[in-house]
Length: 124
Image 1 (cartoon, rainbow, N blue to C red):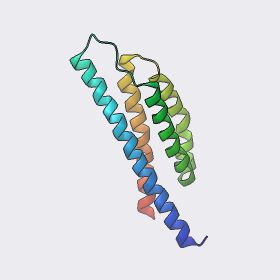
Image 2 (spheres, one colour):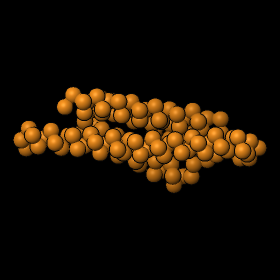
Image 3 (cartoon, rainbow, N blue to C red):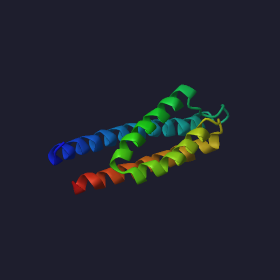
Image 4 (spheres, rainbow, N blue to C red):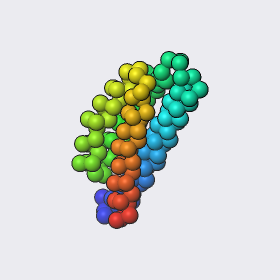
């Protein structure tokens, strides 16, 4: 593979990964809105929960980003995977007051990936 082809493939991988990160962040934002609405409109109702199916899908999508990101910047992406796994486990526990904090933590990790990839893209 020549240098030009390698650069094009890396650029494509970065753009695809950034798009995936943006999509996941939007999904997390929707859950954050739902948590707030649940608390405001129905404070005495059961806590907001994310279904097991949706948590599995979210985890799989984040795992895909991690795998793609590791090919671009191994240290940044692989070091965050343990923290993401811990946060997803916490999301599976239906405790209302932690829901927003956990989702915000996931969003923050994805923001870090986003910054790392954009910096790399700007250097290219």
